[in-house]
Amino acid sequence: MTIYIPTLSDMNAAHARINPHIHRTPVLTSRFINSLVGAELFFKCENLQKAGAFKARGAANAVFGLSDEQAAKGVATHSSGNHGTCLAYAAGRRGIPCTVVMPRTAPQAKKDAVRGYGAKVVECEPSTSSREAVFAEVVAATGAEFVHPYNDPRVIAGQATCSKELIEQVTGLQAVIAPIGGGGMVSGTCLTLSNLAPHIKIYAAEPEQADDAYRSFKAGHIIADDAPVTVADGLKVPLKDLTWHFVRNHVTDVLTASEEEIVDAMKLIWKRMKIVMEPSSAVPVATILKNKDLFAGKRIGVIITGGNVDLDKLPWQ
Amino acid sequence: MTIYIPTLSDMNAAHARINPHIHRTPVLTSRFINSLVGAELFFKCENLQKAGAFKARGAANAVFGLSDEQAAKGVATHSSGNHGTCLAYAAGRRGIPCTVVMPRTAPQAKKDAVRGYGAKVVECEPSTSSREAVFAEVVAATGAEFVHPYNDPRVIAGQATCSKELIEQVTGLQAVIAPIGGGGMVSGTCLTLSNLAPHIKIYAAEPEQADDAYRSFKAGHIIADDAPVTVADGLKVPLKDLTWHFVRNHVTDVLTASEEEIVDAMKLIWKRMKIVMEPSSAVPVATILKNKDLFAGKRIGVIITGGNVDLDKLPWQ
Image 1 (cartoon, rainbow over the protein chains, first blue to last red):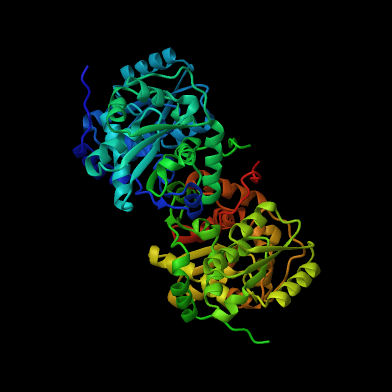
Image 2: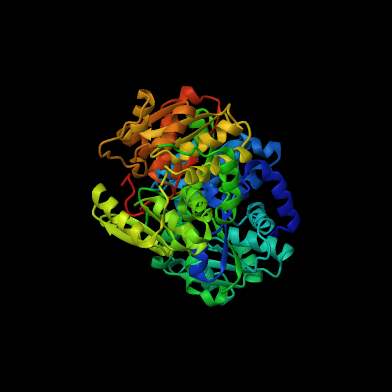
């Protein structure tokens, strides 16, 4: 099987394509957190992105890159997280059908968010076999284009636009750190920085309790977790061939943090920076705090990936 | 007794003076909230201000406007809210002493925040008489300059810089709405807009359960609440002569909202805009939602006044 590796041209085309449909999110700083970590952190706030997550970038790139003929048949995905919401958002902007297959056990708020953008939710049982069977039925019935949450060159080219903005907004960065689940954001970061700013080191941050990327990186081949449990619920999914390509070739290191460290970092950022972000987005700061020597005195870009959190179930309560 | 009414020149001088010490805070928007209210809202995010509140502006103007001689003796105030924290922040920036008199019953987090900026906390009993006696002792012992939380021309001129930025950041505003407690932010808004954009209407938003400004506005003279109880704890204090001057002369109307409406609006903004802000900051949106006709189709500036909230005690939990 051959895979298509997206290029810098794909990223530039993506940025031109999605610009009307995304926010150029702000970069925020906190003197207090800087003094705590002993480095200068620049937070790229994708929690303030359309639909509340960076995944609006990749989803919009996939949706707006479709031919009119394919677009008429719509798009589909399986996701109980931000990708489903963001694909629904992008499809809604183009005015085309979108179906998201979700386990019937997924939170009502997630289903409501997808429906709120005008997409259809089709429920499956909470198992891989049921999800695959139901998804195949959806695609067979509609002819919808499958947009994978991360292992898709269109999606990675879209996520790559985030780092392009970041290096335009902040000069002199020496490293960029992003959380890693399936690796879509990290791959996009690698795509852009390896071409436009290859001196910037790229770190991936991961929960200890879902450390498949860490173990894959050390082993030199993809290792998947077996049913990981972590508060950073956006980071449970495994690497796939396309994202593994970028991680293996361009990531400097994968750093991990414990559940307690993640929740403490999340609360710290909420308290000092006054932004609502997901537990997944706190993993980079958690790993910086426990690897201060690595980052001391440096200018570090930190990607805050999303803000879709259940306000009634905060992890410190 | 004569009072000095700050002028547009004072506001411009304030902005030049405090610029190195404050953030030019971003203006955020939410398509979802716009569709809900039927108007275009532009949120001026002073929750992202230094020390987490707009009060950094007025405090910095007072502190950096002092002569070296007076500055050496320091500043003092009584406040268990954002003004104390912000005065401590400003004094810390100038490197001068600061004393904040607070009831011994004030939350530990508030005392810690003041001390975190290098200021001294002096505790009093939770009564007006004790506060006044203890504060008089502090001033007698130190010669510190008293900076009132709002009834001070230097403070109002500082708060007025917020609306100057807002009208530079957003064109075509037809109204601006801000929460009202003592009236410092509303007075600053009146100062700037009545001079620079007198066609923009100014609304003050207040909790029903602390509606002294509403009743004062309707009666034509200052009426104080008797021990108001509201989740919007920054808005309990009464108008004073200087702020009453601005409210009486320049405010179009005072609108009120119930406790439930305030908490609902707060949660809506956290959820959709991904920002952490105080209950007080939610009062404007709560009042817009119940007065949709008044704002329909208009471009409205909404001042988010602060983000210092106890994350362990959120009002919807």
